[in-house]
Length: 195
Image (tube, rainbow, N blue to C red):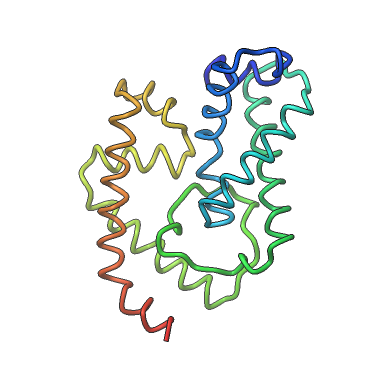
C-alpha cells in the first residue's frame, strides 16, 4: 500500500486535489475489488459496493498508528458493505459462477450455500487449480498474488518490478486461458443446468 491510501484517513479528503482524490480512490478500488467480487459475483454490484464503502471510509476517519491496522479497517468496512448488499439482495446468494469461483477468498466471509453448490464449487475450484498449475510460471505467480493473496496491481508491480500495464495484460491473458479451459471442462454441465 502506498502513501496515497494512507492520506485517505490522515487528511481531510475534501481538501485534497481532484487528481489526488482520484488516485486514492483507484488505489483503494484495486485493493478491495477481488474480495468484493468474490462475495457478490457481479461487476456492477462490486463497483457500487466499493463506492459506498469508500464514502463510508471518508466519513469515518479513525487514526491508525500503523499501516496494518489501516488495511484491516479498510477491508472490514468493505466486507461489511458487501455483506449488507447481500442481505438486501438475497437473490445473489447461493450462485455458482464459473468465471468467479477462483478469486480472492477471505475466511469468514463466505455466505452459507447448499451442499450441492458447495460440492460443485469445490470441484470447480479443484479444476481451476489444476488448470492454473498448467499455466506458464509468470501467469501462475500473478494469479497467486492477485486472487489468492489479494494484492493490488501496484503491489504486484512493486514485488515483480514489472509495470502495472504489463501485469494487467498478463492477468487478462491468464484469466482468459483459464476460462477457456474451464468452459471446455464444465461447459456441457453448465448448458444442461440452463435447460
